[in-house]
Image 1 (cartoon, helix red, strand yellow):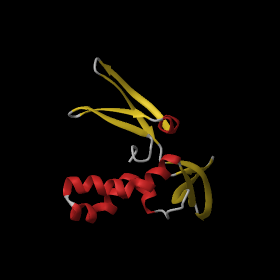
Image 2 (cartoon, helix red, strand yellow; image 1 turned 135 degrees about the vertical axis):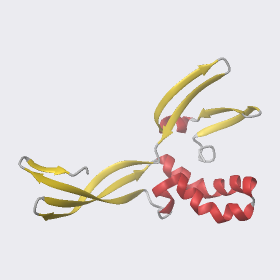
Image 3 (cartoon, one colour; image 1 turned 180 degrees about the vertical axis):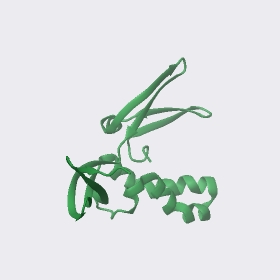
Image 4 (cartoon, helix red, strand yellow; image 1 turned 30 degrees about the vertical axis):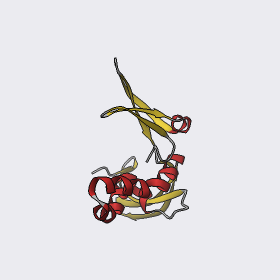
Length: 152
């Protein structure tokens, strides 16, 4: 997906060995670079691409019952350029790769499940979405010095 979306390039060197490089867009989109290893014939980094980033929280309700309370909140995430690009190409790339591995019938039957496993929350959003909301519920308990998140 990252090749089709223009974030990396891949070039075969020999069987089971590839030259994988970040494109300029890929370099800009990397959120973390780590685990550098160097061997005579291999210089390797691991990188993380964020598909979305936390944007803000909105408290939608508070229910207080004695020393207990529940806070309902909506966490809003903004979809990154990597998330937008991979969403555009995910279904076609996954279908083509899986057709070669498993055949057309199996690839088609499992397409939605495979894409949702790879993209998580992004898989089910409307096509033009640039953000999404995840509802959450947080339990609190009241103590002498105030309300505290109940981590039990």
